[in-house]
Length: 325
Image: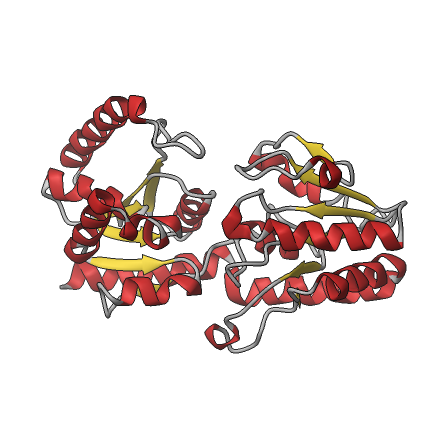
């Protein structure tokens, strides 16, 4: 099949394209260069985005793709404007936030209804998309297990707070865990990315080593430097960051609230209690055997449920059903 993915979200599209290529398909990605500024509407960027979308639509009309797979719900307007069939992949804010906005809400609903097929990437999105499409399908986020591989941890008591500082990630819980962990063991080093709209207050920032973000290709090497990972605590899901850390054999302390989605719950240390989270991290840092066992279970679980090749095969089945209609 000749397949085009449009727009990149959290490296999901690129990883899916890699899997589809390995399955023998002629798959490619147009990631879109123009992005919304963090925490702003970036009105000044709208003309450039429209120009890029028009260029991509011309390319689609010339290239005769069997499948056009668009990421981010309202971006389905490209298919509507270009008068070509498209599949739509929803990722988070494109439903939970945008459906509540007047114009973007209208555009999102129209894009979802007009799509040939609709996918959603995390279980918290199910009730949002179900209001618009009863046939929407859950497509687990794909992890490239060749890139994200286990390695021996440093054993020096280093922890990575991997989620960005955004209200939807529950940073107040993550920081409360860090405060309690540092109270118990001041020597523990906790690193975090200096990234997000709600940066830590000075007292909390003093407990963290705030780092610049690294290119995606460097994330496996970065994860190898840590013994454990702190994830997110509000949405109750596993984002790509947590899944990739698990694939690298790193124990993850986070909050997961959708065990019914899988045939077995993910082996994360799920909590929203700062004392429990800190105690778990303390135990992990002290006990190499506990870390190793938790890391192995994490890797095995991701292999069974989020391997990018299995997710690509799932997509392939959807694509064949669409083409057969």
